[in-house]
Every structure is written in C-alpha cells, then in structure tokens.
Image (cartoon, rainbow, N blue to C red; front, side, top):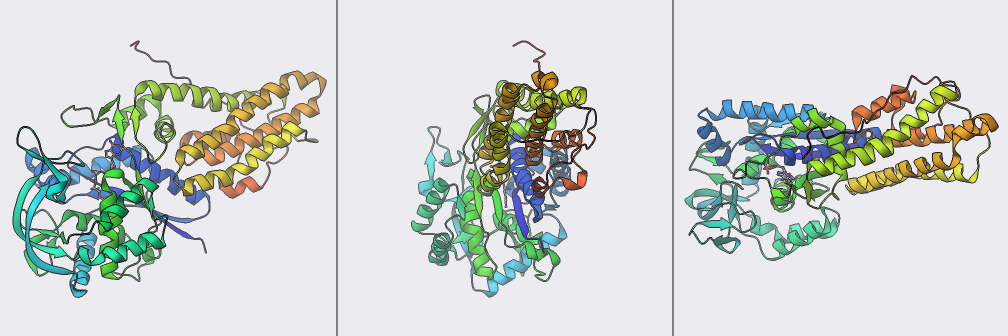
Length: 513
Ligand code: MSP
C-alpha cells in the first residue's frame, strides 16, 4: 500500500485576477506534490478558489455582474493559470460548489452540537480586504483620520451586528498542547514563535457569521446569517476529502501533510483551523508552512501601483520551466524576495543555459559524434569517477530531506553542486583528448557523466517537468522508469540514444534598456 500524502495551496480569492504571488504558492506546492509522486507516495494535491465574502461580493458589484457569474469567470482564470503553470492538482475546489455548502453546513452543526457556537453581537473593527476582525490595539489611526490594520495596512471599519461566535477562548491550552506535541507543525521557526506568543497572549472568541451581506453559505437554521468567509474557506480542505462523508475514499488523505500558505494567513491556518477541527473532533493538520512575499522590481505589488504581474506572459516569453525554476531558486523558501527581469534572465543564462544546458549538450553531442550514439560501457573506475558518482548517489537523499523541510532552494543548490562538479569533471577528464589515446577510458568518462546527468534530470523533474522530460528522452530513459527509485538501477550498456538537441537556449534581451 502506498502512503498517502496530502498537500494544499490556499484557495485564492476571486476578487481579482491571478498574479505572481498566487503562482508562487501553487508552483511550490506543485513541486512537492510531483516529488512525492516520484518518490512513491499516493499524493492528493488540492488547490482552488475562495469565492464568498464581502470582498468578492463588492468586486462583483463593481464589475456590474451577479456574484456567481463574476466568480465563475475569475475562477476559470485561476484554473487557466494553474494549467499554464502545469500545476498537477488532483482536484480544484470552488467554495460555491454544492459539495462545499453541504460540508460547511455539516461542520457548523457539529460545532453547535459540541457547544462551541453561541449567538451574540459583534462590535469591533473589520478589514474587508483581509476579511479579518481586529482588536483596537491591532489597528492604528492614519494622519488623515482613517484607521488601518497595522499588520496589513488594510482599512478597517466599525461593525456592529448580530453574530454567532466560536468559543476560541476555550481552545488556548489545547492549541498550546498541540504545538508543543508537534514541534514541526508550524514552520518556519519564526512563524511558530509568532503564533505561540499570539496564543499565549490569550484568545478572544471569534465572530463566525455576518448579517450585513448575503454572499456566503447560510447558517443552518438561521438564514439571516452567512458563515464567516474564513470558516467557509478553511473547511475546503476537508470538503475535498468528502466531508461529511468520512467513509469517502478520499478521506484517507485527511489530515493534510502540508498546508502551504503565505505568511499573512498563517494565523487563520495555525490557530483558527486547528481549533475548529478540535471542536468538531477531527484530526489536525501535520504541518502549516508559511512562505514569504515577492515584491516586483523592488516595489510591493498593489492596486494603487497597478504592478501586479501575471505569470502567463512571462511563460510565453521565457518558457514555463525557466519561470518555475526562477521562482524556487531565487529566494530561500520562507523568506521574502524580489522579482526582476534582470535576475530572471541572469539565472536563466548562467544556471540553466551555461551550467545545466551545456553539461547535457556537450556530453550528449560528444557521445553522438564519438561514441556511436549509445550508452557507453564503463571500465575500471578512477578516484574522480568514484567521487562524482558518490555525489550523484547521495543526491536523492539530500533532495528528499530538503523538500521534506520545504527547503526548495537547498534542494536546488544540492542539485547544482552536482551539475558544477560534472562540468568540472569533463574539463579535467577531457574526453576529447582520450578519443585517440584511450577510447575505453573515454567511454568510462562519458558513462560516468551520463549517470550524473540522469540523476540531475530525474531529481529536477518536479521543478522543470517539460525540459527534464526532454532531457530524459535524450538519455534514453524509458517513460516508465523515471521515479526516484529508478536511480537504483544503472543505465543499460549499448542502449541507443536519440539525437541530442539543446534544452535551455541562452536568452538575449531583445530591447536594450
Ligand atoms: N482566500 C484566502 C486563503 C484562504 S485558504 C483557506 C487568501 N487568498 S489570496 O488570494 O489573497 O492569497 C492566497 C495566496 O497568495 C497566499 O498564500 C499569499 O501569500 C499568496 N500571495 C499573494 N500575494 C503574494 C505576493 N506578493 N508574494 C507571494 N505570495 C503572495 O488569502
């Protein structure tokens, strides 16, 4: 029986078009999902759209269309972005689907039955942009007299309305026990500390319904209320597993192995979500990992600057794999980063075209010309051969370990160490000089190189699926043998290799700046 592995992205708000930030979360989750599949897991990878709430309702109103039509349109755009980025999700959940309404209403009833929900009245600050309630101390007055949430800068408004509350205050100790018993559950460590001190500071009950608008899931038995959009949204992770039907085949995936989220929504995932689940008597997620934010050419992406970048034109210009590579290579995962054309082009030319592209190209075209276009046999090994092969053999373990910690950049760095070592090995071994003097030794050198390149290609598939598929084709690696485990078997002597062609062309900036 293969082990289940469940990874999710947040579900994206459909108040605006998809941009680089969304593509980032999805690509990172996709790399992990693809790696786990290659490593023999039974993966369930979920993404989707968050379609209810005041923010989406007002975006629909501004567009002059009914909310359902509006969300259908924007959700389709998110699904298109996922397709263009080759996101390999197994399901795409939309919170306006009937399965989700059923699931939310079922969990609501569970929470009521558990005595975790009561009717009261909310009076306090609310930021529509964040769809979040704030205590007065979490807000500040701007010089112009308007009030904002300090953490996000979003405008807050004073809300007074009847509301159902979730007894979050009753979960403080249980949450602290959960964090204590599962040290890796909130990562990176800085986020864990932030959440720990927030929870230790005491928790207020949470308003979980609204009455001042209607674009949401009705509260069972009191349809004047719609559920708070974050309760609605978080439940998506179990809806997709078939909740409330716990006998559903998909339910085997719950609890999630990783909820991947941006740093601004960690509190919802690491505090509210486990508390809701505890109250409903459901198992808790194994890990919530928070990643950083991208700025673009040094600026924060914002409506006022109008500098949201859509990744699709970048994919058209640079190629999908170059964009996917850049997103995960440029910044340590968990930290913030800056997107610029200049650094994208630089990484593409140096690391893809020069380092990796050249390694593949010069080895494979040399074999095509001088070694009969087949996998050369290998003779006795020398010290440098052993060294390169040992680096290659150790790599799957290193990559696996880095990806289990969501250290994508570290996995890439480990892979690039092998790429650079292989390039240095060619230079030192100089197979071109061996051609006349010692053809057996030349074959051994080429064979060692092929094994190293195959290791790189197999391990890079999750990051760059198209170009690594092409490289593995050129290495004659059968389609059925591209799992991580395939590296345990050596290549076959004399297997024919197809004609090689370059995989990563250098990018030449067409317009001079
Ligand atoms: N709908 C909620 C999530 C509900 S999950 C139960 C939401 N949606 S969102 O569309 O605003 O953002 C979703 C994701 O996009 C977050 O992980 C967020 O961090 C990411 N990004 C949005 N802008 C970003 C950047 N500028 N940089 C990196 N990622 C950012 O929150």
